[in-house]
Length: 292
Image 1 (cartoon, rainbow, N blue to C red):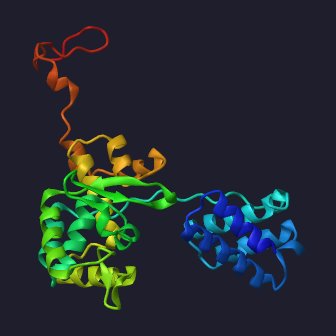
Image 2 (image 1 turned 120 degrees about the vertical axis):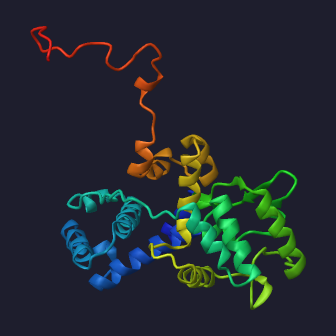
């Protein structure tokens, strides 16, 4: 079956589980839209399908997923020309939402439980993704090296993230109180079940409202804030890229969105010229005549 071949091919090429699921869903949507096999379609059909997606106001990310999934499918049968009428969707660059350090303090101060306090402190202090947090094992925490091992980040890449001293202290208290067995953060269903992403998202929105933060934000905003605050503290993009687990530094460039106030605090190179003093020359016009 071609669907199984597509899934097997993605597994062999190291596609993340989430990506495999997304691409499979995209092909299912395509099949249901036309009520026939993708093998029976023509390039004009694919064009009509993307027109339908546009009219449905699908996001740029969604369109890119559909394009990638359909391209992969037809590549397996050597029919890449099926997308010849459809331009490659481009993701519009957006300015990400970032919390100020004052807002971060307010958010963490309004956590109602110790469980909330440690999760959101960990998310901000390390910059790891919510999907990486729910998969953390006890063995992934290295207190001695002050590091968090991310076994399988986005794209299946392993890396180390920061374990701040304050976060480590909270984690030790948390482990004494909750006594996790395998998953660091477990579900109410049992210690062998990871906490759900949805429960963390719901807790975040509740706390954001309690903190009186009017600015739009999601759990992922903590990751954006981590990266932005490091950049503002003078750390290089390459270091931030490695900590975030970005395969391409172009993704990290998203955080070059400093505010006008920050830009105005930059010292002009003229200020570093020691022997230059204002007023040392009379103003002259192009003919050398002095202005009085």
